[in-house]
Amino acid sequence: MSCAICGKTVDAAYKPFCSRRCADVDLQRWLSGRYAVPVEDDDDPEASGSSDPSGA
Image (cartoon, rainbow, N blue to C red; front, side):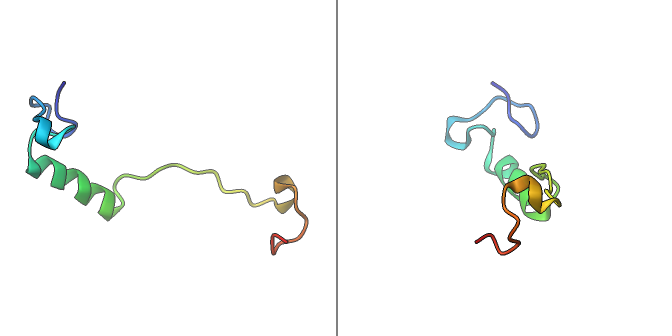
């Protein structure tokens, strides 16, 4: 298995990374917004099954 950041051999103590540095690089990418989980915005309230915008 290789490090998710640099490709070196994974160290069990830092899995899935090879070192603390690569783990910190990954964390910084998440915190800065470089990584993002895609979502679909639902602008149509009718599609959600509720016509009440308050969700009640």
